[in-house]
Amino acid sequence: MPVAIFDPHVIARIEQLELRARRLVEGFLIGIHRSPYHGISTDFAEHRHYVQGDDTRHLDWKIYARSDRFYVKKYEQDTNLEATFLVDCSRSMFFASDDAPTTKYEYAATLVASLAYLLHRQRDAVGLTLFDDRIRQALPPRASLAHYRHLVETLETATPGEDTALGGALRKLGLQLARRGLVIVVSDFLDEINPLAEALSLHDCEGNEVILFRVEDPAERTFPFGGPSVLLGLEREAKITCDPRDLRQDYLAQRARHVAELHEACRKHSFLLEEAPTDSPAEDVLQGFLNLRGELFRR
Image 1 (cartoon, rainbow, N blue to C red):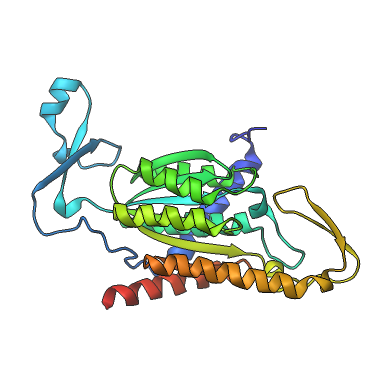
Image 2 (image 1 turned 180 degrees about the vertical axis):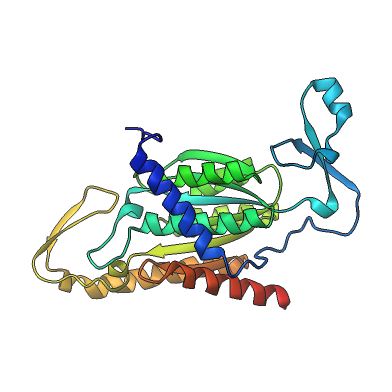
């Protein structure tokens, strides 16, 4: 059932998410990207549609005379980064164990809203794609404040989807991007590695930079369950009646293999993978990520 955006409770949640994002990024507003489009020349680069807030001095009046539409001239020195967030909203992302401070999706939304705000402050364009087993919703990159607030609203009003098909969503996004840029994937990565690795290869060939945040609940990391239990699948309807202590070692071993394969797939293309456990303060994850990015760029 669609969420009523005009519901005062929903509006309050949207405002709270935006406020959390602003507070998280204030204090360490540093560059987080190495834009391949920055330069010192003033050579013409391309046109794009005018959005509210653009400098009207760069309007192309010749195109307006022909089309009755406003277009802005972009130059090599001011053609900033376009960043797209690919956010997992499958059912498993809405899980929270008893000791977790928040669901994985709520944690992911806070990270995305914060990074999007930081990019917006740098006058970069940000876009958002929500997916589960398909693309659920897509906002193309824009640089206006109104667009940023629409992005936050879209994050806050998302509802649990179906199973995860990350590889397919990432591949489809790669084929849809109009120009090379930054793709930030936020997911629990509870999916097959091979399709994801193939999609990462596509983005590498296209010249995109990909950053991945792996969100994990503390219970998924430690598997603390004990005593006779009925375990329910996070995305599928499978039920297992068991004593979880009999499964813990096998589970932890499979988890370790999966995480190692994920890291290897990213390392192959020199893409950055950040761990984002929901029991860690979001500001610590962001600060650690920004510090590492800054160190890589200084090198």
